[in-house]
Image 1: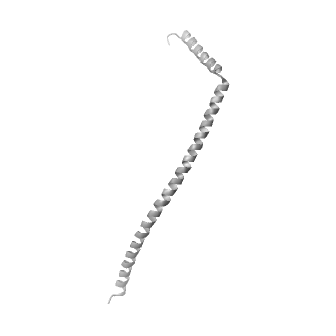
Image 2: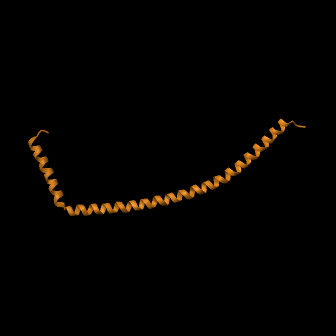
Length: 100
């Protein structure tokens, strides 16, 4: 006959074995579910990011169009005159300091 201490120890080992097997089964099932959840959420995140990128492209196109309109409204005369003024200033500076 076994003593009370030996019985408790064997019961503990049996309980640990059942717990380990049960834990492994749960971990395997949870791992599959976790992969599915992660796959689904990553797909949703990718869709969201694609939508945001599309909106960003549209906004950038609008900004570029507004910039083109602004430049065309200002006219090329102001650009030409500022370029000519810079060229004149550079030439005058060279005349005053011929050696550099």
